[in-house]
Length: 280
Image: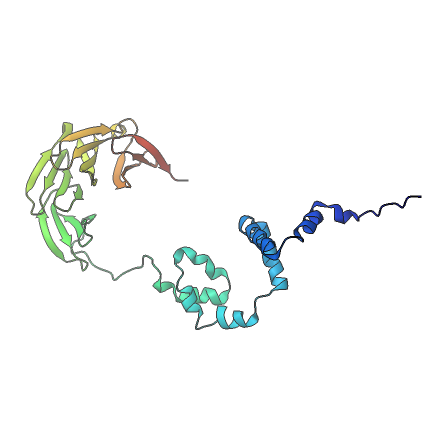
């Protein structure tokens, strides 16, 4: 009578057990490489590995007490982290406390000393290209203020919109666009169709963009001018824009605030509509 072949237990025929039996034949460095790869590619494997390490290779208590919770070392450790790494403060109460204590040294906008503008009514037009002066308009005069809000230069420029380059100033007022020197001398002027122009913004490629309106907000359009001669180059956006109230340039693109449609419409400098940015 033939002897019956011994049957393997059911658990030894499962895929997991077969993989375990095959993996057991691999050298240690190959197994280590596979384990590391699995941890990098799978959150579940990474979690399981951390749990296994906690059981079989727990973190030494001395390292926790004398390094990770050290009052002397923690400020040095967390001081390297920037604001975008704020999640580290959730590790424990000690780390949260040290994070708060080292917060002052991180990059952030913080209130500075309160400075008083010398007039009650004014319009802020931003900073000069070198970032050294603020530009404020008061009673048809453009003032250049230093960091202490003291006026260092003043020119007579009536304007409802200002754009500045390193060597000239562009102002819009009603239907008129004027290019001035920093001494206030008129260098060029233009009045496109006697329509209202506003929100001037200068590009680095020699173009000046303005919003142009005939009084009907649904007819708003963008006009591109040569920034030196103020000769019109092109128009675009009519029928797409409704109550355009602000322009900005970034990355070689023109951003237009469209108040009626509650969005920012993005154009190329040639007038092609690239995309619209909407809030939630």
